[in-house]
Length: 156
Length: 453
Image (cartoon, rainbow over all chains, first blue to last red; front, side, top):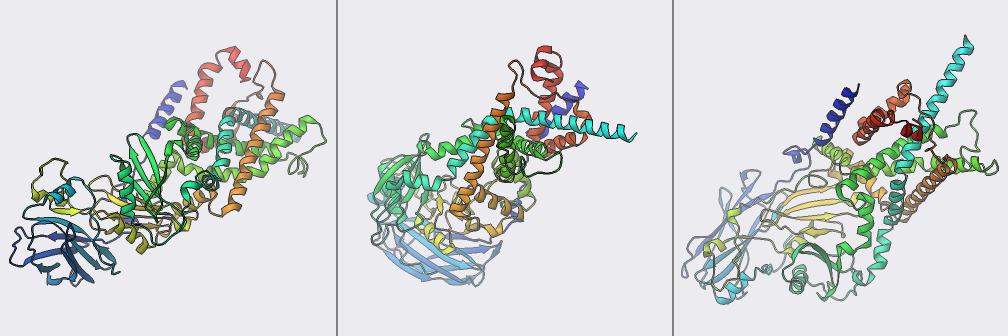
């Protein structure tokens, strides 16, 4: 009798301690999103005299996005001295969209892609360096400050 | 023959009554202090919105004037004032006359910094540990004693169900139902009857409400609640992952594609190629996304602290239908998950509604006062129950009714086993008591006599 009781207590304690946890991929049982995924490709060498091509590869649900709702590029210099406004990108197929720009001054730059397709809107931005950084730019980077948003206006 | 049957059935009914009474008696004495604490703190916490509004009015209210300053500027102001602190949350404020809040952690402390969104100026700071309502909540949820406290509260809540069920049995009229002493206390039948009626009659009136508060509070509990939520979520009927249990999705951007932040050295300590890469979205973009997605104005933005973390928009609005949790990729701004009340599983929808009712926010002031009435009722019933015991208690004994063997009490045994399975903590405590009885109480005559076992 007593022995049974102890066994019962142990079993119950064990069940209690082995608490339930969530199954992997349980989110598949609930509402899912199909976010756009963007890879922004910046040319390895940026010439001061010739055009450089900036690309974004868009994917959604594992496939390249053809004929996206919109893809716009925006490029500006960190100190605000150079601003290329929002510009529509050219689609060249396989989910690749591009623009060409001539960047003729050294420094710290940002490129931001605004893209939308099938309900997902994204606005990733990448930082890139042309030539040498100025002292101010170096200081800015080291302060770890967040970048000021240079978006002129939203177009949603 | 018939006579004998009648007599034995009467006897067994009397002995069942005694057993139920005994369970009610001991459970009541042990858990009365906790139920009292829960009712008092709960009754206060119901009025959190009004209390905090009055306490922190100087921090909350601002003078609307012109355009608001951007979120990033407000946060920058806070960063300047608290260098070295990590900014964890930003709450824009639900109305034009409400300040914004920036939550920061600095060492062990979590501070809420209030900012005037029109001037970008600092209004004041509150240490979250100093907030009286946070303390009340901590007592209500875990008696300020962490996990141990949480389990005690849960145990008290589960045993309160046992108290309700056994209490209802004791209250149920044995003879012809009569309004007096059942629905209305008898004031003119002597003190003893009045004491009983002042416990049993109000208890009947609040039983449903008390049961409701217990059931709606249990999903919060650390043990039963967590398991319940995990089972519900796994089955697709619960809260979507990350809204109660589970983690948020992570960013779709690969770590090597993220720009590095150099340390504050005189020279650049990382190659420029490492500086090239994705950088986190400015918080102003996140505010814009929140507006675009139609968040309830009460929302808060949780700022990621990890490289693969996400911005999370979340809101705990008064009404359950406005609940929402949205996870946003911190580099691309893509909505990775968007869970609204409509996207909860059926079970979670009921639980979530139970929670806003429990907190007294769903139906505003009416909800608050109804719940307060139940809390006051619980306080009254706990006190009259305790008073009844003090009045009856013999000096050298607990004064519990004699315990007949539980094995002969089929229905009660089934009830206890049933509750013990649904609420394993109850089961565990019943088994512990039983072992205690078997190993100690039955062997030491003095203890046996004291407990009337």
